[in-house]
Amino acid sequence: MVEATARLRHIRITPQKARRVVNLIRGRQANEALGILKFAPQGAAEPVYKLVASAVANARVKAEAANSYLDEDELYIAEAYVDEGPTLKRIRPRAQGRAYRVLKRTSHITVVVATPADEADEASTASARKESN
Image 1 (tube, one colour):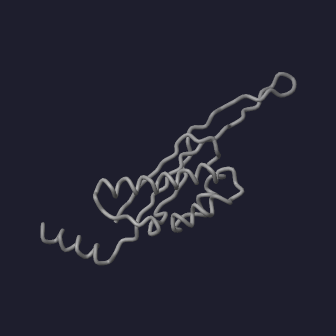
Image 2: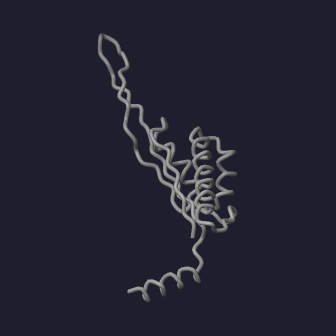
Image 3: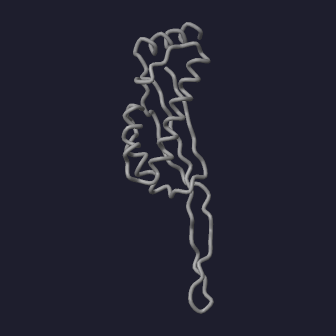
């Protein structure tokens, strides 16, 4: 089972808006997720598209390093979540010398792609663990 991660940090999109896009692709095949993101109207779709493409490329590089075969059509989005990043605090001038605070929120987006685990692979690794103990 190949698993690869890609992270995008400090992106100037509010976490609430980014979660709307990430929820569209969670659990789907990677190629299907890229197709959905390509035509999604939300502004966060473009950076999430690039992030999923980066995670697929990371999986390809990881498989090549391990000298194993990777079928990119089998990859699926194992995990996808959005965390809140640091908030930029700005001042908006108001009437009579007052000032209102403007919060410019940022996000940290994480995408993990993986190949589905085969039952035979899991059984062989479990039996190997029992024998080593």
